[in-house]
Amino acid sequence: MIGKRMGAALLVSAGLVTGVTLAALAAPMLSEKPRLSDEVASLAGIEAVALSINQFPSALRELGSSAEDVRRRWTTRLEKAGIRVVEGRNRPELWLSVRAGARPGAGDLFAYGIQFKLVQPAHIDRLDRDLMVPTYATGGYGMARSGDLSTHIEHMLDARIKAFIDLVRDATELTRSEQITRPQKP
Image 1: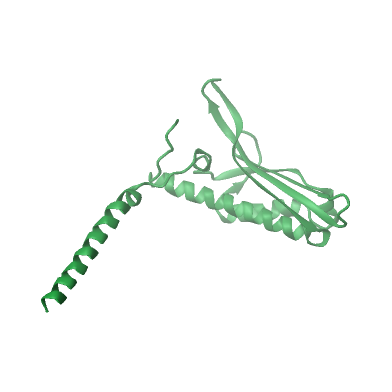
Image 2: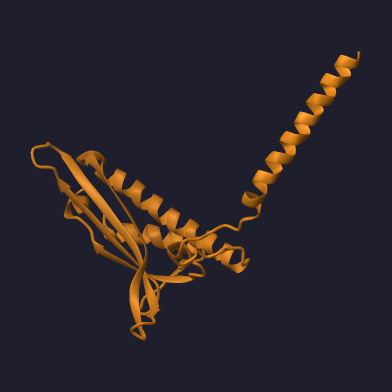
C-alpha cells in the first residue's frame, strides 16, 4: 500500500516537474511577437497598384492566352481583396514578365518562367532622393507540353497573385495592430 502511494506520488511529481519545465521552455517562444521581413513589411497598407505586364510570350498567345486575360484576372482578384488597380506613376506598381520557349530537341516541351515584383516609391537617405525601387519579388519556372503550357502558367500566376494578396493583408493587419517587431540591423 505504501509502495503504491509512493509510486503514485513519484509519478505526479515527475509530471509536475515535466509540465513546469515545458512551460518554462515554451514561454519565450509564446511571448515573442511575429517578425516580418522588411520586404513583407513594405507591403503593409497597399490600397492601390498600377499593373504592368512587360513581357508575354507569343507561344502563349498562339495557344489562346493573352496579357489582357491575365490583366483582367489579376484586376478582379486584387479588387476583390480591396486593392484598386489604377494607372499612373509614383505609386506601387506590379511588374509581371512571362517567358516561354520550346526546348531544342525536346519535341513539344516548353520551358517557362515568370518574374513578379512590386516596385514602389522609396526615399534613399544617402542620396536624399525618392526613387522607384523593387521591394518585393518572386517568380517561378517549369516545363510543360504545349497543350498544357497555358494551364501551367495560369496556375503559377494565380498562385503568385494569391500569395501577394495574402502577404499584403497579413502585413497590414500585423502593422495596424502594432504586433510586429522589425529584425535588428546587423
